[in-house]
Length: 144
Image 1 (cartoon, helix red, strand yellow):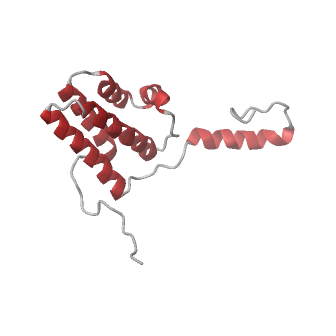
Image 2 (cartoon, rainbow, N blue to C red):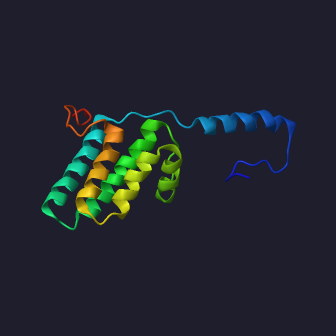
Image 3 (spheres, rainbow, N blue to C red):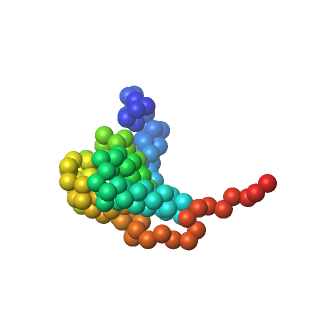
């Protein structure tokens, strides 16, 4: 009942409330823009992965996966989609953005480092628009 939003014992007063809840869920959350700090962090992770890829470092796969987590979470946020567990990323992306799903699958499965890095960068650009650093990469914090 609570996990799936099903009414076990129908009641006329619940019909309107149930319909409203289903409509809100179907609409999804409001899209959330990346903050300057989140954008910087994602681009920095992608650039760190690029450096490892260029050096032929086997740790590239680790940094690529860390960057994928940032990029995928951000993609769901900016598109106004409900976040899902990593186990549901591929099926959800396949349904909503097959090209992004293809990039994600490539990052996760290809043994070819340049191909993996290219797919990672393509996925990040879907969120950031480009991979250029911008001023204001961190949020202002008042000093006490």
